[in-house]
Length: 278
Ligand SMILES: C[S@@+](CC[C@H](N)C(=O)[O-])C[C@H]1O[C@@H](n2cnc3c(N)ncnc32)[C@H](O)[C@@H]1O
Figure (cartoon, rainbow, N blue to C red):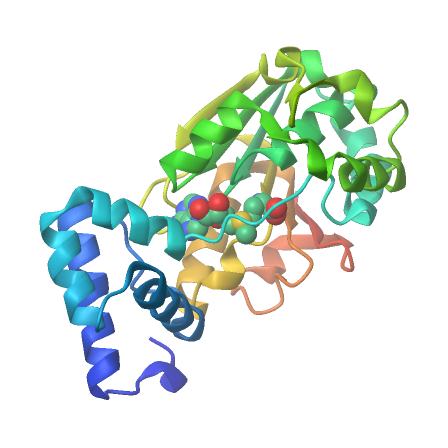
């Protein structure tokens, strides 16, 4: 645990009991998540679900699976969008795609894919670059509810304008409308985009490596972990990658304090693209 997190006031002790109860009862391990953001989210949950204190949440989730599901959806932050950080996708097209084109078969792992917008974004990019047919894409998340949404591939039409802007700025070669159908208030992504995608639940804090990946993308996830858990997860990514494989992180995440920065070359520091050394 990080030093700044060792406040042993009654609320911190209640929080520790809650995290321990979640782990013992449901197997989800939030004990090494960044405390400041966990505290904020648990407090928010108290307000939304009208609990008097954290101990009341602990009691409820131990006996009531639905109460736990409600808490889980407040603990996992699922904010995402299509072609999030368009410059990242531009850099991916320029720096990563040419290397991927030299492989006959590709395995790509999106860890913490949330509701799947980034999966469909990458599938579109890979199609446009003529790579999709040789790809196996693994889309994983700790939260089964968001994975179900990812599997469905249906997004609110209200987001389409923003996603279209992102797509254009990301180097998109066609029109985003070519990859989806509008129906009432939703857009339905072309089912062909998920033909080579396997959706699966996977917990970065407790589960094992995914072997021999050419690309691992884990964007805007480890920012919620404490330093120790981040280091373990970086090791997991390192061990999951093929030699010469690419690791892509979110804009506020970096390999710098990962404990394994020596094992990677920097391909694009600003866009957080790294490559496992040969
Ligand atoms: C903010 S979203 C990021 C989504 C997407 N990668 C992006 O950049 O837009 C973070 C996701 O990480 C998932 N997550 C949190 N802890 C996780 C863990 N231990 N293992 C796998 N996924 C986790 C959450 O459920 C959530 O869907």
